[in-house]
Length: 312
Image 1 (cartoon, one colour):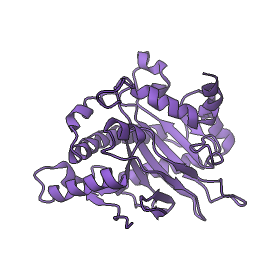
Image 2 (image 1 turned 60 degrees about the horizontal axis):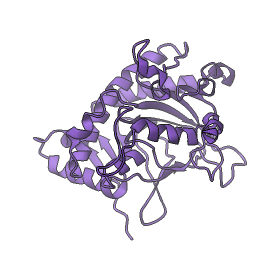
Image 3 (image 1 turned 180 degrees about the vertical axis):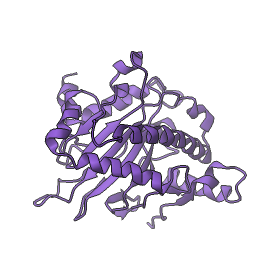
Image 4 (image 1 turned 45 degrees about the vertical axis):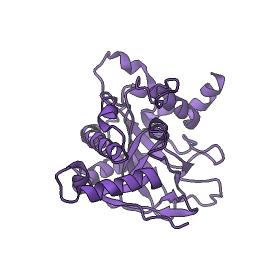
């Protein structure tokens, strides 16, 4: 079986029905979403300079001493906000905990908003160093979620779904912005050690930018792995389990991994997920709330939540 190449899509053409290349972009998005589960997009509202600034902010944070970063350790909060140390996640139970570090933030809600009681909407933890860290990430979060929503609608329309129906379920999205820091692959790492082990994403759409260093590998339908990298200004797009279920398989979630190599790598995914109370089950089956699906997967992944999940 020959695997088709991962589509490279002009986002402006995909989002503008009057664009001369709109039909070409729609066809490429349909292939990427329905057959491959991955695509890249360029010519977006998020410039290379903007993305480089975000990556630099994460790089400065991850360079801090571990004892300093521990002040914002998410293992102490019970939610996915703040810093995750190496080994704090295990995305694949057949592999060792991932050796990457992360920093997570989400939607900023007004103080006292009832939704802040839910782990998916927990208050963000903002370190006081590096200077401007919170401001850079918060501004990017707003713009990246707006673009992700437009992109998701366009992709849904491309595969024959009603994009507007889904868009109404993303008014206060459980979108998670993450910085991943992959160090050099540790000396002595074995077959069960990964920067992030083989997994599928949990939610709907992932909007990923990187510093350009190779590392991401996509499992192909015909077998084997395809390396996929992108320079700042080009985004890697893939889809999660929730969207595959919600669209009854019209959009597919594809396994991927980072084994790690001889270079450090920073990637910045935005995991774009719907409102907590969105019913993400397809028509004709019992409802499944988005927050229940996500929390179950978080409980399985975050090492500090696994023990509590087993007791539930």
